[in-house]
Length: 265
Ligand SMILES: [Zn+2]
Image (tube, rainbow, N blue to C red; front, side, top):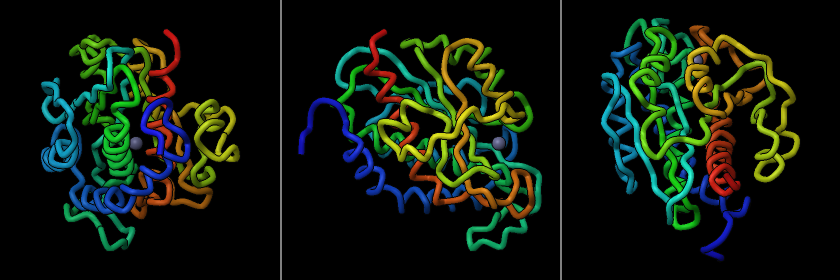
């Protein structure tokens, strides 16, 4: 197998498949410990325990419960910043899944456990390719997306002013009422995913508000990841992130990072 040059779609797929079962279990562990804004201590401990298995530098936190980490490629180059939100909601869960919330009155009814697991998986996949790209990828596990203005506060505290400065920022949100595995990122879809996965012009939503503080400073995109047309709506007590969307989510973020880093400035 080639171990230099551009990461091929087949290589990317193979790496994602290797870690997928572990990432599903990690998602379930996060699901059991939902925490709301600025209380995300157990969640943060779990994230750090997982991501420090890789050769990654943890940067100083900007607010109480954030985790920011940077993965460096072979040589100097651009930076891409990927963000996941980590907070849960004060909603009593009624999904009935075996990995049900162990915190009465709280649940991951917006699926941020899925976003967090996808970002952790993206770190693991990109780590295996670190000799194959130049530049760096910064990973932001951000608290208080739902309430408390976590995104705004982290940007105000200088998240996007850190060296190396980001040339692009990306985040995704799992979305019911859209086909499973569909995404809104055309160039990446054409290269790395099934062409059927492209979803044209996803409507703007409230969930984009918090990430808009990033997008006011740096170009990028907030992407919807389809959870299935019949999936339980967000913020519903019966909501549980669709594990079948994790593979596409990890592939999407990894491909976005690799494509952005290799594009000429
Ligand atoms: Zn959300």
